[in-house]
Amino acid sequence: MVFYRDLKGQEWLFPPDIRDMIPDNHICHLVDMVMGGMDFNDLESSYEGPGHPAYHPKVMLKILIMATIDGIHSSRNIAKLVRENVVYMYLAGLLKPDFRTISDFRKDHPEEVRRAFKEVVMLAKSLDMVHLGHISIDGTKVKANASNYSVIKKEDLDEIDRFIKEELARGAEEDEKEDEIYGLDKTGYELPEDTDQKKIVSKIKERFKKGDDKERRRLSKIMGKAMDEMERGKGNLASLTDPESRFMRNSNGRIGLSYNAQITVDSEKGIILANDVVQNSHDSGQLIHQIEQTEEYLGKNLSDIEVSADNGYYSMDNILFLKSKKIDGYIPDEDIATEMKGSTRREGFFLKRMFRYDKNKDFFVCPEGKHLTLSTEYLDKSNGRRVRIYQCGMKVCFECSSRKQCTKSKKGRIVKSYGHETLRLEMAEKMRSEAGRKKYKMRARTVEAPFGDIKQNMGLREFLTRGVTTVKTEFNLACTAHNLKRIWKHIGEKSVLADMGVNGRFSTLWEFWIFNPIFTILSFLTQIWQLQSNTKNHAAKDTLFLILPPLSGDFMAKSGVKTTYFRLLSNSFFE
Image (cartoon, rainbow, N blue to C red; front, side, top):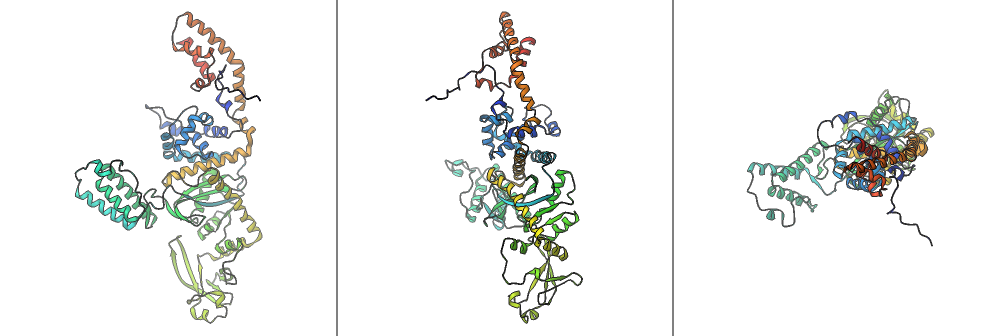
C-alpha cells in the first residue's frame, strides 16, 4: 500500500500567498471585503499623535465577526485563532492582537460594531435582498452572565449601606496581617461561595471591615451600582455579578437573570434589519423602537408595508403607532393567539369578543343584551397602560340565566378595555380572517430562523459580557454575522470573488510567473555585487534568503512575496 509522503519539511522555491491556503468559497473573503470597505476616518483621527501603534478597527472587526460566525465568543480563544488558524491570520493581516486588546475593543467601541451592522444591512439592500414587503418583529430571552444566587434584597442592601457608612465614619482601623485577614492560600478577592442571603451579607460586611482601601472602594462601587439598578428597575432584587440584568421568564418557563434581545427581520431573505437588547422583559414597549431603528438604518419611511408580531406586542399604543405610519399591522390579542394555537381559553364561556361595543355611548352589550357601563379606570404599572373597567352590577348578573357561562365572580362580569375599542375590533376582525391568519403565519418562518441561527449555530444562548451596553455589542456582532451568512448564501462564491478582485488573485499569479523570475535574477545579481563589494549588511542576508528557498515557517515571518522583493531591492541599491 502506498501512503502520502509527509511534506512538512518540504522547502518552497517561492513563498506562497496566504490566500492560496484558504478555499475560494470561504466566507472570510466576504468578511474581508465588507469590513475592509468601511470608512473609519473619524475614528482614525483619534489615533493621531505619538504613541504605540494601534490595531486598525477594520482588523479587529474582521476577526470578531469571523469568530462570531464560527460560534467563538471568548477573547482568549479568538487570540489563539489569530496565531494558529490561517483564516484568522489572513483577516488579521498576520498581526497578533492579544486577548485583552480584543476584549477592550469589543467593550470600548460599540458604535463601530453598530456601524458594521448598518453597513451589512445596506449591502443586503443594494443586493436586492431587502424588499420591505413584510417584516416581522420578535424577542427572545438570552441568559445573562450572572448566577441566580448572586442576588441581594433591598433590605439587605440597605443594611450593608448603613454598615459601610458607619465603618467609614469610624475611621480606618489599624491594618492586620494578610494571613489573618485572608488566610494562607487566599487573596481576598474570591467570590462568596455561599448563596444564603444572610451569609452573603455577613461576608460582605467582613470583607469591608478587614479589607484595604482598594477593596473597600471596590465593594462600595458594587453596592452603589446594585442600589442604582434596583431603583431604576423599581424592584426588590439586584444581581451583584451583573446588576443591569433582570429576572425574566424564558420559553421553558424558567425564571433567571437575562436580557431581552429584539430583532426585526425582512421576510424575503431573512435579513435582520434592526436589533436591540433591553432590560424590560415585556415586548410591548419595543415595537415602536424597532420600527424607528429600521427606518434609521435603511434611510426611508416604512409606510405601506406589512408588520407582524406575536401577542406580546399587542397594545393600543402600538396599534395607534402603526396606523399613524400607514403600516398594515398583524398583531393578535391574547384570545386570538390562543385560538390560533388550536385551543380555547374556556370552552362554552362568553369571551370578550362576544361583547359588542357601542362607541357612541361608551358601553358594552353582553350576549344576553345587558349593558356593561364604565365603572372605574386605573394605570397598570406592569406595562404602563390605562385600563378601563366595565360591568353591569351584581344584581343584574346574579339574576341572568347565562351567569354560569359568563362569570363566577360575586361582583358580576367585568370587561377590561385599554381604550380605542374600534381599532381593537378592526384588528381582531383582520386577525380572524383567512388572509390575516396567512399573513401572520409568515412571522414564524421569518423571525424564528435568525434566532435559531444565533442561538444554536453561533452558540449565543448566554451572553459572555456583562452590562447592557456590552451585551448590545455582543448581540450586534451576532446579527451582523447572521446577515453576512445570508448574503454569502445568496450571492454565491463567483459573484463575491469577482467583486473583491478575484481578478486580483489572477494578477497575483501573473506576478508569480512573470515578475518573480525577474526579481530573482535581479536579486542574484545584487548578491554578486554585494559580495564583490564585501558589504555585510542585512540586505545581503535578505537577498540570500531569496536565492536559498525559504522554509514555510520562515515565510510566515515575511509580509508577502511582492513586498519582500521590493524591500530587498530597495535595501540593496539605495542603502
